[in-house]
Length: 389
Image 1 (tube, one colour):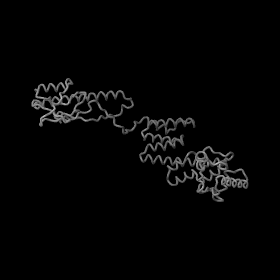
Image 2 (tube, rainbow, N blue to C red):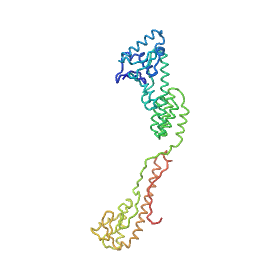
Image 3 (cartoon, one colour):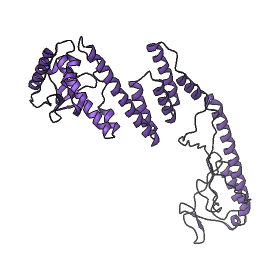
């Protein structure tokens, strides 16, 4: 099927091939453009004569129009390309047009399809010499179609914003700002959409771009609406937005509740505090020796002896399934051991808290000045092993 392209450069194509001959001559191309814009209504021959042969006597002008239509039928390869006698219109089964598709999409309530067809201003850059009336017609139709295009984009932007799709709204407003870069109203709406999408810097940048364009093209001062919105965005704090969680993991992030003294978890204490698992010494040594061994282990001064290869059925088993021999003296000293262990854990916890305070203070001092007003929430688990509620 033949297709007339009127948005942007005017051309007639058959598939991927541009038509030549009569379909490429400016005045005959203008005939096709007027018929494409008229759509199914068609246009009278008198209007075609007034637009395209305004200075010719009536009879020569009518013969020129008839010759133009004949040449177009021949070069388009269809005697049925045009319908009607008094009113002339395109045959939709032979020739389609982008402007016709644009109007049909708007009539169907599909603005997204309509703006997809709009590839540029109507008959952009096309002129026929010495046809002032045709030039005025082009300007009128171009402005009307541009307005309908802008209304379709605005409807799409508002629909996206209402659905919470701020990025989509920004995309539609950007396209409208590209089509009408000097409009203060469009600039303000794009700035608001950018701010709603979390890009306040982008909103302020667009304000600067708009002010530069107005100054360069119109020689006017910045729009008061754009300037006022930019000043407000600079002065107001940005709204709180969800941010990805940052994990603060010091060396001793947390301490698990202690197991009974004979089965402490391997990671029960922080590595910095060198709180080794509390296990009783093997064999039948005295309680004093056992305490000394455990104290040395807590200070990192001695290695724990390997557990015995076998244990009585009544002996405890640690988390790794290894038997732990517990002497009677150790069982008697368990309350004292638990107290010392709780004391070590409290010391380790205080060290962790102090280290966290130092880290947060340093981070507060080194981070950029603009971010120091933001609140900080540190999340962790606090546990007491003293038995005091």
